[in-house]
Length: 67
Image (tube, rainbow, N blue to C red; front, top):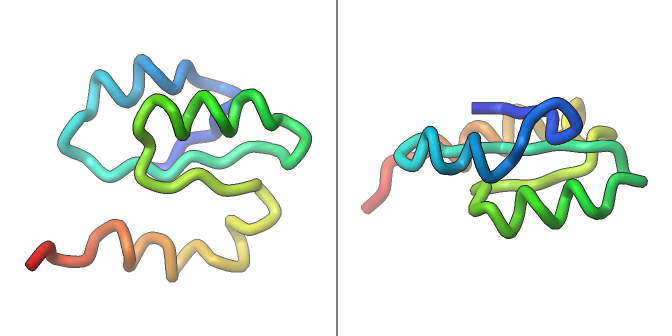
């Protein structure tokens, strides 16, 4: 799941989808939102500017089989 942190409540999303990898992104100035998503348990939290550059890499990491 990929979430715009500015549009959701990170805690609610993390609680609703405990078994799904979650990638959260936010504007680099939203440090509080980025921290909330990290604290809520998102698997990856990045700034919005990195999403375009790293989307494939991050999705591959989140969906890789667990050994």
